[in-house]
Length: 86
Image 1: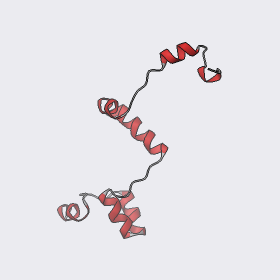
Image 2: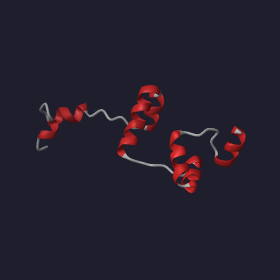
Image 3: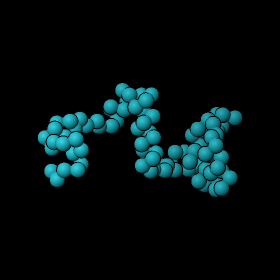
Image 4: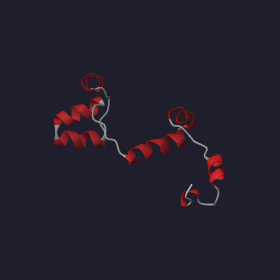
């Protein structure tokens, strides 16, 4: 059964999210199972980054850019650099 499901839609398992799509629209379900239906939001991006920083920090530094702005903050001065006019 798993082999047939994998061959048909690309995944060997069903998730709760995939079942929600299947109950609503089978075309959307097929797109979801093939990875063609992806949602993007700031919350999902943050969650992905947070998860990667916790569980795969070596991959996180390859995928995301980490800036050290300490030198910039020192040149601006003050405890709250956002509150300055510089």
